[in-house]
Image 1: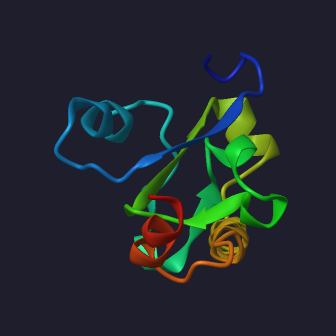
Image 2: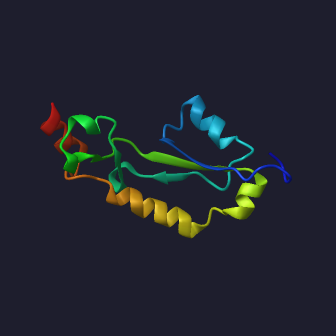
Image 3: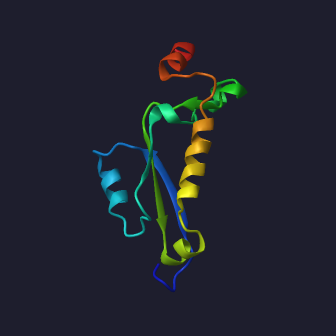
Length: 113
């Protein structure tokens, strides 16, 4: 995966649980490009794994946790698709739009408990 290797680029999206081994492994990856993007829970939503049990309008939901995004790339992947501040901003903005109709986790839990 060095300079002569393939062009590989991955965005790894995980809960921002900084005290678990997964976080340390991603932070220490030789393929990590820049700092992890950490999006506060209140600033984004995601596609819920239980989306099939909910109305179509509720496919997305507000997040319960901060989310970390790690950009892992080979040398050639980083050359071809550099992770710029513009990319990081676009991703944050897209995540902010995916909150569904419930403004808070508490409101969402009241609906589905």
